[in-house]
Length: 113
Length: 110
Image 1 (cartoon, each protein chain N blue to C red):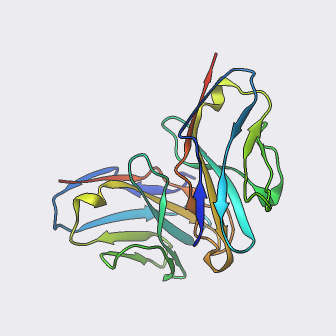
Image 2: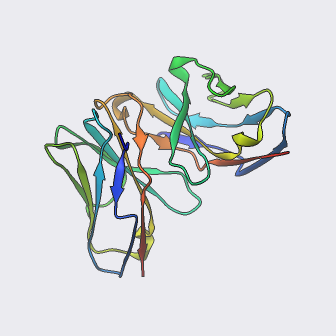
């Protein structure tokens, strides 16, 4: 089991563009959470998907949206990119939507120019 | 609102010395507290959670509800403990949502 995988590893976009990041959860997991980690900061919760629905959301604007597929993989979409969206985007998977341990992926480094 | 504060960005100790990484939280309820660790070039991983009351790699952490703290301790630091450590909180209707502190970089010198 490769654990949580994310693609791409790195991405460079310009302001105003749109981006899609992908995540495959660890085998046996059905819940995916997304976090944004700015340089020098701890990860910040964006949202969580369980049973193909957004179950919880952090303080992020509607430009951030997501999707979960029947195979539990997930996408994070960001529209109208701003310079401040430059960050490491982490995906974490777990079993169930409760307190179970979250396993993190390696992240996607997004740079907005 | 829930908040986690790690007052030290950097912490340096010598091998064999005791180490304590501080974590304070703000939450109106019964939180679940975690310590995550990120070693160089590795992904973020769970070190321990207060509910399991385990000692992992010699580290322990006690939840002090009176002082709203969850400090991470190890009596004898090892060089391989050098890493970034994050304290995180989850609770109430926000279960599954982790609120992280800013992290502490621990360096253990030989």
